[in-house]
Length: 407
Ligand code: PLP
Image 1: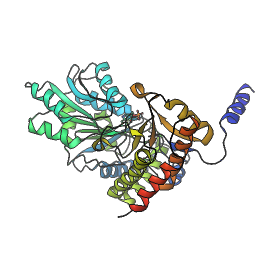
Image 2: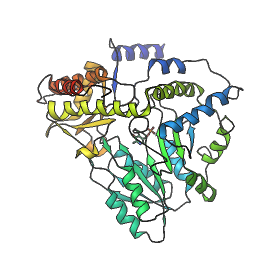
Image 3: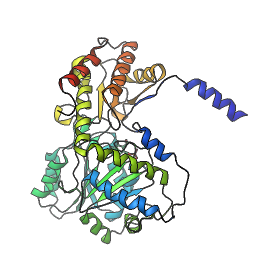
C-alpha cells in the first residue's frame, strides 16, 4: 500500500503528456527498433544459439571502431568499467600513466589511475580546451627511460563539449619513438564522429552503449590492439571481473565468463545494423551537420558562447553553452525539465551553474534537435536570460536549409 501510494505521488509529479525530450549527452534516444529487440523474453545465456549473436556482433563492432587487427570485447558495465579494464589488464602496479585533464571525464580517468595505484602524471589544461600535443611532447620527451607505460586521451570531453585530436597525440609518440600504449576514451565519440583505431595506432579504446550506440546503459565496450593484448602477458595487476584476457578467451568461443545482458546484446545487434546501413561516414556527417546547426543557434542566434574556446575544439556530440555572467544555468535546466519535459545536461564540477549542455548524438534528426533548441530558448527566457525569442531556431534552420543533408 505504501509503495502504491508513493508510486501514485511520483507519477503525479512526473507525468506530462507528449514525448519526453532527452538531450543529455547520453543516455541518448533508443530507436524503436532497438527497443523492440531489447524487449524480448529472457533466455539461457549458454544456449547453443548464443555464439551466433555474440561472435558476429563483436566482429561488426570492429567496423564501428575501424579495426581489423584488434579485438573487441564488452563487459556488463558502463564505460567506467572499461577504463578500469584497460588499465588493469595491460599495466603493472605503480606504472606511470600520462594524461591531460580538462573536464570532468578526463579528470576522473586520471583520478582512477591514482586510486588504482598507478602513478598518474596529470597535465592540467584549461577547461574549454583539450589535449595539447605540446604538453604531451614536453612530458614524454623527459621520459628517457620509458617509465610512462600508457598515454591517455579523452577524445570527446563530454563535460565541456571539447574534441581532442588523437592523431596529433599519436604523432607525438611516434616522433619520440615512445613505446607507451595509447589509450583513448571514446565514450562520447565512438559511433558518432571520426575514430579510426588501426589508422590512428590506438591500443585501447573505451566506449559505452548509451551514447552513439543508441542503447540503454549497461554495456562497456573495449577495443584492444595486438600490442595491448601482448602487454597483458606481463601485467602483474590482479584482475577478476574485468579480466580482459578471460573475456577475450571466452568471447572467442561465442560465450562470456559470466551472465551477460543478452537483451542488450540483441538491441546492440539492431543498433549496429542501423549504423552500418546508414554508413559510418554518413553517421559522422549527420552528427556534424546537426552539431553545426546547434552551434549556429547558440553563437549566431542567441549570441551566447560555447565552453569550447575555439572551433578546433568543437564537439559534434555535445555543446556546452555558457550562460551570461550573473545568470545561473541550474534553474534553466530545471525549468526545461519541469515545464517542457526536456532534459538538458547539467554543468559538472568546475562549470556547474555556468553551463548547460545539449547532447546531439545518436538517433537524431533536425526536428528532434529543434525541440531542444526551442525548449532551451524558452527556459532561458523564463529565467531572465536576454535572448531573442525564435533566434536559435531561426539560425539553426537557416544552417540546415543552406546545408542540406547528403551534400
Ligand atoms: N568518459 C566520457 C567522455 C563520458 O562522457 C562518460 C560518461 O558520460 C564516461 C567516460 C563514463 O562513462 P559511464 O558513465 O558509461 O561509466
